[in-house]
Length: 65
Image (cartoon, rainbow, N blue to C red; front, top):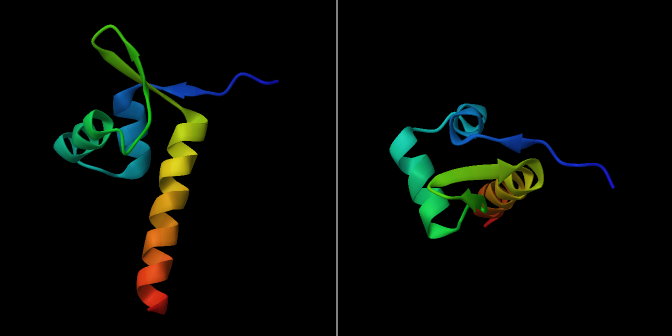
């Protein structure tokens, strides 16, 4: 089983083209899954992909309805 890439919040935030406040809201709410390492967040690549896919499904549903 390959080890997934793990992003620091700043890296993941830039990939999502998202503001800092909104990004941390997602982490704190659990909408974007992450790992806590003390006070730091780490975001595994599969969690980032899951968040992106969920967002695409929501947007596609809105366009079809």
